[in-house]
Image 1 (cartoon, helix red, strand yellow):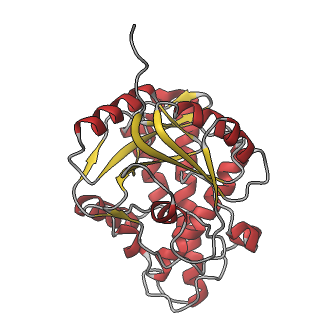
Image 2: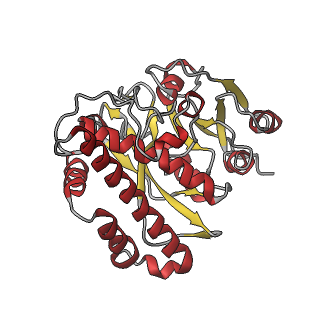
Length: 317
């Protein structure tokens, strides 16, 4: 008789706040792993109850408004049994192929300090095969990676989770082949609300000289590409042509079109909000800002309460 396959010897951390629509599917995809923490920020829905029912450990988290934020707090404070940690958002799913790749990697011994994973969007029930490419450091040795502070605490719509930037890694960064699936079960309203906050954050950092902090964890090649991309005119249109045309997003049908348009709209928001901030100071948008970043853009004024500032989605896309 064949014995049961042993669990993958690494720790998985899922950060949540009001993720009842997503948490069960996420946790089902994590069954192969040895240790799972759900770190919950006072959810007002059934997130914590559903996680308890799934048999995983639920840890409450309350942000104090300072650094470290949630990811670094998890690395510093959770009673992790394993040095290798996989961060998974509640709206992400680990495929069997990725679980198998992680098992092989951990069992033979990783040769890097962290690993990048691709995240493949699911739109209108369809896994996008073309177009958008998201890549992030999600698997890391907890003693060799750190999420550095970012000058964003004064931004009214900022939240408790570190933003769109990679950790600083002490050692080489590898890449896994199998992707995560990003399959948010929430309605489109949640995506637009979340990205309205994200674009506020990026615009304030761009305008206030905080972009360097976002690039600190990137490799030289990706850092250079991002700096060039930031300065390109007509970024939304160029991004749409890249994703929908050159990267063959049109082969994903209506789902590919919707996703490419939504991404272009997001970058239009960032550019418009950055220019709006520059116009308030009457100086070029690439000047260093002396204005407090707590000022709000037209869009952020709708969601700038303290409650919203402390509310974070588990996902960053």
